[in-house]
Length: 408
Image 1 (cartoon, rainbow, N blue to C red):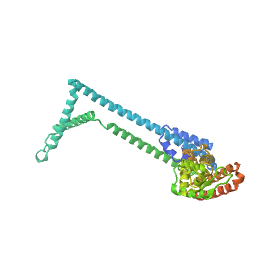
Image 2: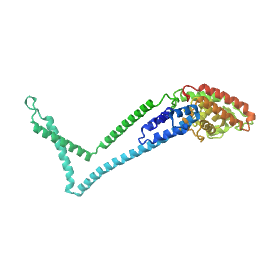
Image 3: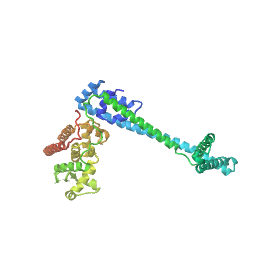
Image 4: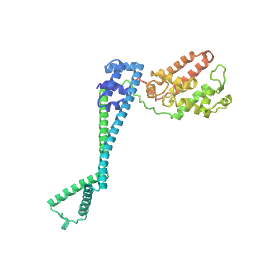
């Protein structure tokens, strides 16, 4: 296993270590090492680190590839575990079926009046009676004079063997007539041993990485959302900025959206209320209803709460102005993933891998390029330019410790 290359991958996506440690065949490790080699263009660990530290696009592309590998590994693990659970369930069903079949056969023999059918019941009754009789006898039997043992060693040994045999027979009777959870206990024991083994493998892999990897040039960035302001606080802050740009009621003859109030057009309000609306309805809009429209149509579908602070404002503001799908595709192009208009794990991972300030700048430039291509730019271009500049400055002010730079 190319541990130095794996160590580079671990600095970019720490979650990949768990998959590598749990993969006995080494398939994931080989795939990860190959991804690092392809991204860096070299097999030398030092040269690979230098190449990734010098080229943020290569590093971001590698982050995306590692996220894809992690997702595929999780999917295969889930399928494997489902198969194991299904096999264990089938085994349990077969065992219970055998027991049920034996009981059913005996019941059929009893209904037919066969004498042999009474054999298991008779033996079981004798075993149960004998077990409890001997147990009661031993419990109630008084010791000999002076507390001495009542039986000599040979007799005591025979009694111990008899009690042990009766105990085993009693367990067999219970298992036949009632059933047993032994298979469940064995399964739990196996799962526990597998978990212990996996934990040991993870610890060994991490220890090897710490020993073989030099001080990382690349800071690790978790794919999980960074701690910070709550979703509600972030949404309110972004909403305030968007409403500063949108203003109040406007009905410019050159605006294809027609009458607009706080960024909400006739069409948007009609779709939200699921019915026809008038210009008077647009004029009468309240901030509370606008807030719910923004959350339902833009903030939640574009998963802004999972984007880095500042980037969420850029995506929301452009989504309100030009459409949610167009805003998401612009984000995806800026982070180097396929622009399908839907924010998923790959888009989130690629976004988290970027410097927030750089990504905000790229989004602002792409937005201006979009505006310049519109036929209404001569009319609205100055206002759009001011809005983009104001939004970019506000977004940069929102970036915080949750946005880690790529190079230490």
